[in-house]
Image 1 (cartoon, rainbow, N blue to C red):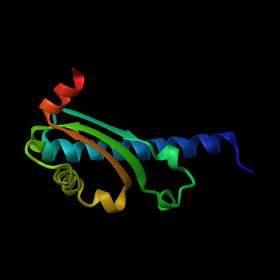
Image 2 (cartoon, rainbow, N blue to C red; image 1 turned 180 degrees about the vertical axis):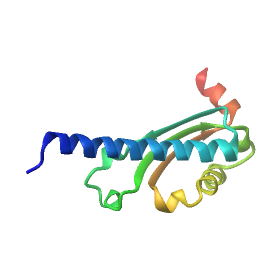
Image 3 (spheres, rainbow, N blue to C red; image 1 turned 90 degrees about the horizontal axis):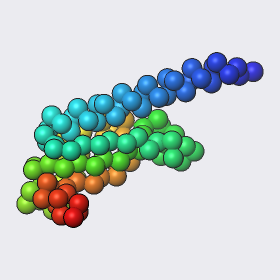
Length: 111
């Protein structure tokens, strides 16, 4: 029999893991790319039951604005993120939605 406190404890542990993963992703990207803007969202809860989520790795969305992307294609920008995240791509991240812009591109989108 599962008690309500057991479910709450499991949920709290999952939330702590998710928060730690987001912080680790943010730290790696800040260190490698010095972004002007960075937002990392854990979307794992939207993929419960999905075969790729069964191994415990998460689904994340990254919005990042950095000068490091200037003159680079979309694929090159994604590769920069993958390189910055390193081993996290195989240990913690199952799926990564990337929205990577230069400061100028961000300014154009805002107008």
